[in-house]
Length: 594
Image (cartoon, rainbow, N blue to C red):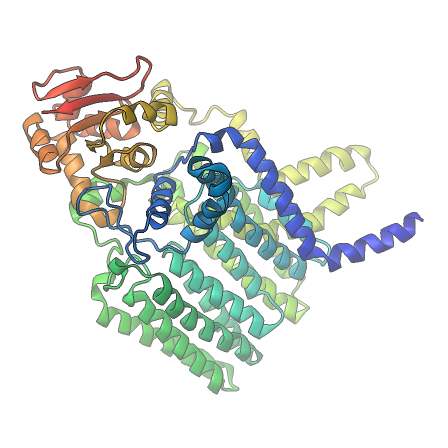
C-alpha cells in the first residue's frame, strides 16, 4: 500500500507541477493577505510610486483619458508628467470595479491594493518552477517556490500594497529565464520576446536585462545553428510585441522622442533589432564564425544608428538638468552601487545571488557532457551572472539578482541536501541539513546581522526613520481633510502620499520629468524666507505642511543651515505663516500662507 502510494505520488508531482504551483501560490497569497490585513486596511502604500499608481488608477476610473497619464493634483493646473503606462493599472482597476458594488469604493481600493501585487507572483513562481524542473530535475520544482520565499528584497516586490510595476517586471524576468532554457526553440524564443516586450511596455527599468536576454539568444544561435527557430520567434515577438505595447499603452507624453520610456526612440530600436535578428535567422550560415561576424555587424549597425539618430539618449536617460541630478537624482540611495551602502543593507541583498552563482556554476560544470543541458545551464548562468553584476551598478538590481539566483540555489540544494539527509550520523542529518539549507538559501545573512553590531542604526537614524514612517500614515493625514481643499506646499517625498490620502493638491513628487517643480520645492526650503514665500505664491499654495525630522527635511537643514526650513525647524516665527491647529500628537506641522 505504501509503495503503491509513493509510486503514484511522484509521477503526479511531476505531471501536475503547473497546477500544484498555482495551488501553492494561492496558499501563499492567502497567507500574506491575512498576515498583512492591518496594513491593507490602513492603505499602507509605503512607497511614493505605490501612491502615484493608485492615483493613476483613480483618475482612469474617474474618466481621465486612456492616453492622458498626467496627474493634475500635483503642480496644478498643468499637472505632473508621469512617464508610466496604464498596463499595470488594469488589474488594480479591474479588482476595484469587481469589488466596489459589494464593498464600496474605499474598501474596494484597499483590497485591490492588497491583492493586485500578489497576482504577478503566480507568474514568477511558474517561471522559476519551469526553469528548475527543466534544468535540475523534474521533481525539483518545489525548491523554486521554497527559495523564492527565502528571498528578501525580491519577495518584497510582491507584497500586499506594493502595487507599483516592479512585481510585474520581475514576473516577466522569471518567464524570460524559463524561455532561455526551454528545450522547444520557437516556444522559448517567443516567451522571451513577449516577456521582454511586456516589460518594456511597463517601463525601461529592465531594459539591460532585455538586451542581455536577446544577446544570449543570439549567442546560442551563433554556437548552435539549430537555434534559428528560437532566434526567429524571439525577433518577431520582440518587435511585434513592442509595437503593440506602444500602440496600446504609450501616453501622449510618451509619443515624443524621450529616452526614459517606450517612446519612438526605443520602439525604433526594438523593431530594428527584431528585423535584423529575423534576417540572421532566415539566412543562418553554416559556419559558426560567419554567424558570429553577422551578429556583431548587426549589433554595431543598431548601436551606430541609435547614436546617430538619437544622440540625446547617449547620456542620462532621464535628461534632467545638472542641478537636479546633483541635488536629487544622483543622491537616490537605490541608484547607488551595492558597495556604497552600509554592510547591514548590502549583505542581505548579495547573499542569495552569491549562493546562486555558486550553484549555477557547479550545475553548469556537471552538465558539461550533456549538450542540451549544458546549453540551458550556460544561458541561465550567464543571465544570473549579469544580474548579480548589475548590483555593482545599482542596488535596485537586488530583486532581479535574487530572483535569478533561484535556479542556482535549487541546483545546489538538490545536490547537497540529499547527501546530508542520507548521512549515517544523526547530527549531520539534522543539524547539517538545517545548516546547509540556511546557508544555501541566504538566510544566514539575517543571523549574521542579528549577532553583529556592524552598522546598527544610531538613535538619530531611528528618530528620522520613525518620523518618516509616522507622517505618511492615515491617522496623521486624515485631520488635514477637515481643512478646505487647497494646494499644499510640502516635501517632494510627501506630495504623492498627501494627494492619495486627502482631498488636497501638492506641488511635487519624486519624478524626474518634473524637474522644475522639484527644484522649486528645494529652492524654497533651502533659500531665504522671502524666496520661499515667493515660490509658494507662484504655485498658488495656501498651506505649508512639514514633517519635522523626516529624511528629506534633514537634507534641507544640512545643505542650508541658515535657510528657510532650518529656521522654521528652529521654531522661528514668520509673519506670513499662521500656524494651523492639528491634533496634539500629530507628527505634522501646518501653516496658512498669507
